[in-house]
Length: 595
Image (cartoon, rainbow, N blue to C red; front, side, top):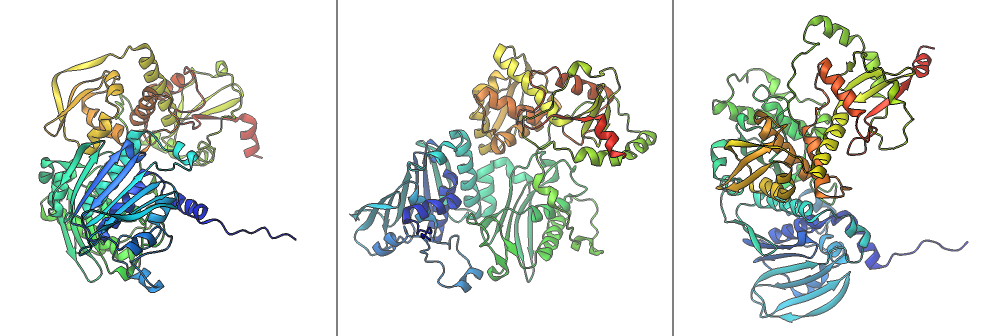
């Protein structure tokens, strides 16, 4: 039989590896910044053009590379950080895998100029798609300047999957903030399309936070400090009154490396228990130092996930430290450290991963479930809840059964199940509506119609309202400013304040800030990929930000409004994000359940 296994060409193998390491322009920024930090740089300059699609350039004053090392760094699995497998369990540098430069150069045009101290000329190397095009000597300063151009030039499909410049730029800013926060001892300059965005001088951790978030941040910070045999903690949390409905600035750094950890996030949240509403999220900037041998960071190429040798103890110490700090600053009225409850480590924290921002509050004029009689009736239908939960609401399919909406008995009093579903019936079936998705569809069509007809009626504020937001959050709003203005939200950013002059008529002043926070969160993290226009995008994001959330008890009028308004929409079957809004259960199916 003929042999069928082939050895892949070097450039093809590198492109495959690049798929893990280089997912978008921000991935390149992260890898190159980490290389500059490992080179003991004291100053790093970042140049970005067209959200990194045209140019990503990092200039540092680090130790530079020799001519041999400069050539070798373009090969896979070449690194100065480790030399044996044992070194993987004692990593103190940012990089160690030896894949970054090789992967980046496989999908872009890379120019590397590097010079070591005591060397007369710098090495200049240019690589296009893993192919060396230039290798000579030039005059340059000590350090390294690496320029990445035409990212994904040889993989059009990957380039087409990149999102808008605004979205990609925000990802770059996020990576920059993570790195710059973890290394306040380094000066960072960030330039976007020729405009200086950040100029962060060398400072302390606290001053770096204030320089990024604004001078008003100082009064919000509560220091956290703890040192044990297995863990050293240093950092800050925001006072409880500054908690947000969306997850804003939440940063964990382990040995100066940014990580994502739902488990540790749960630990901090539990320390705030009783101080903030469960719908709110604390802001924190926490540095954890542990023995490098006690963690494993070689889990994923992005190196943002790590495993702790004793994560339960880390959880308990972190929780107790934050709780103690809040108590020290007279924020927590009662602290009980006599019992060991602070060392209890909950294991059910998986829901943290799916926690998202919360929309506007709904004014409930009547709650039928407030008295015990209704609560008892509500609890008795748990078995029906389980049946409904098993329905495929998560499906994105458009294959729905036909339904005669004229058959719906709209005069029937609707029923809310599990604080999530609204039930009504036709002559032959039950209709189960997901209240959050249905409201998203209702709002989305309302917003789009207003954009199309240009009939938004903003309410002008007699006295402008001022809010504190970070530069990064303001940049998200500014990137969609024209559409938001058309939407009725008129604002400007002045003296580190977001000033609101008018807002959409259907938003209450009391919920304005939380709505803006949700809008920023959704624009930053959950921008739809298939939006046809900016107005469509904003309509989708606003519908998600402002919709009634699952878990909200609705009175009868609100239930019936959601139900009737959904079936008055042009598209009833899916929400703006192509998820089912309702399912139909034939009575015959119910009959079969009792057989």
